[in-house]
Picture (cartoon, rainbow, N blue to C red):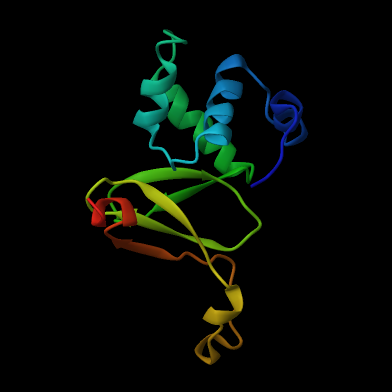
Length: 138
């Protein structure tokens, strides 16, 4: 996890004007490790920011993606979630029962393949689905 002492300066350093809404959306991503959807962020922030719209959340997240601060996660193909960008290679596991998404540490060298020799790999995505430990133990 990245360490950020001042969200406003962090956004400015990445070419983003730090409006109150943008700061709060980024703060939500920084403080909640739940790989949220636009709706989850909106529902959490709208009581505090009644003028917030889902469009603003969506556009802000797209700006964060464009600037390399956030990455889009699509595990099951029909739901877009967001995660703070990490230099560390990791995957995601989505529980089919509780729908929670978990980070999964990946040893990058374990996925090197001779079939990809000569290819210029720009992105790697590792997604898993199943039943999480909590749901399995219920």
